[in-house]
Length: 162
Image (cartoon, rainbow, N blue to C red):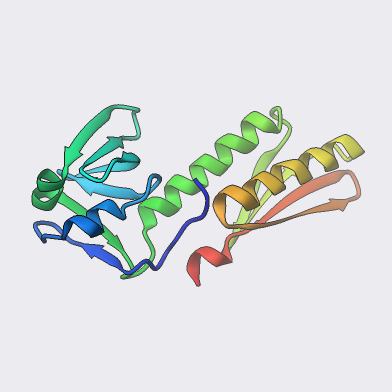
């Protein structure tokens, strides 16, 4: 998953029909609704979408099935399901890579703060490494701040809302 694209020129509401070229343009990583359930597109071969739900169950949906029961809105505002999904993924990555040292502190509008009580150079470098990965994968800007006995990874998500 490269970047979150918030305002694509592609809108498909329930029971609307789209042409095959627009169907082919649905990228892996896109969140959509099919039969009322939320899925992420894992693969699109141009005719069949491979969808995965939050439990990891896979479903294959062809072009006509998607036209009848699919729902995708990108371009009419922010996809809040996608926002929640990305925040969860970021938290999981920090928990795993940060070796349990980083904990979520608070959110201030469009900025998240993860802290560690470790003020060592190793913790600082680990926070920088995590920040670099998040910038590449989630279209956020990260910085690391060191205050007294605290190292803070600051994640700015304002790009998600512009």
